[in-house]
Length: 595
Image 1 (tube, rainbow, N blue to C red):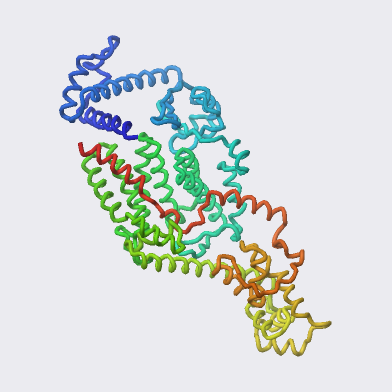
Image 2: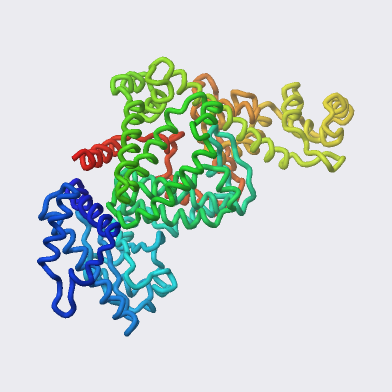
């Protein structure tokens, strides 16, 4: 990349000076129609510019000549378009370094698919491996180019996927394309057993279902893009990120202003443009970075003071600001504002120095059982103190467990209330906790339920009611009572994602107390290690959740398996930036500015 940057550096400076000096290379004395370019005048201009810009003459002369050729060709294309309606579109093929640039003459009434076929034939790449991007959106195959904002002289990015969607489906037995992601997310968005919106502390976020579905689809596509980013498959990442951007735009603006997900998406898209060397998209990147910065300031405070108040540290979010500042510096550089760019690059260098993590300290935390992301995030939050980092990680884990425990408890209680039904007053549901209290006193669940219904959840009256209205027929044995619990409660735990055997162990350990069983499973990552528990044979009726139609359940499981391949299960994964690539870019650009 360094070689292409050096060439771009010459073009940036020459182009900017030509504009400031008001020189038009397509007019006399530099160009005379029909004679052509005046080599003598161009060489004289190159001599002046290489001295004033302190650059090599040959490089300066080559840049001036190419800029002149491009300007004259644009004028010809404009005239041709006016006369015939045939537009000239430039296509940058992003499958090699440096990217290949081709041109196509085409009517803007052509639909996207036919345009893609032309490019596919030109570069000999299968059509299902091509994604075309213009104006920050993926070109639709069924719409005319003119309907998608493409004009004469437009530049289109041709993203070449590393493998075809057919190969992905056959070789990996899962479909990763965008439409399937949307379909899977739509199916799961209303089921908190699979997907739940949370804030930074793990607390469930409650928003209307319509908003929730739109936001979740956008976030799922964003996660797909992030997964590709981590693999440095920037072409594929950009396809998902731009489609996520389109889905985010469907969300309520007030909702977008209250979360930082949209800002993070802008940052990721700008990062993709940089890694793909798509300098022509820098104006778009600039507007995205400005929007991202404004959102970060609203969320964290201009100096991260809100973040300090909430989390007590800034280390990990500071890594996002470092990437933001680096991208802003690069935009300034390509705008030839070299002085401002240098100041921003120096600021980035200071930030990177503060955020560097000692590898030995990371290894020490990993040996204690923490993950690499946890170790890095913990050390950054505690300025490299291993002991404090371990405490930070543990506190963070506990906070999230507590928040998720609260969310799961509320969910389970809500479902259990509905199963138990309403009291005779018609206003309140039978309280599951009161049912458990009566069971612990030795009464059967059915007797407790009926008594609480009749007495509107008054415990003392319920006990009296049971004594005055004994259940007809033989009383249940303890074993029969336990099977009743399993019939009703085990599916609630398995639908929340816990394994059936562990759900039964937890229920047995806690005497049928659903909430305590759920807390036990949450606290121990779904494992209940109680070898002394004597598990009865599991009735076939509860071997699978009965909360929904079996076909629907299998569809959801398949959808989740596809989505979860690329959705990170690591808390704060978006903050876990190694900053190695950032440092490489920083050093490359500083070397260009230091000459």
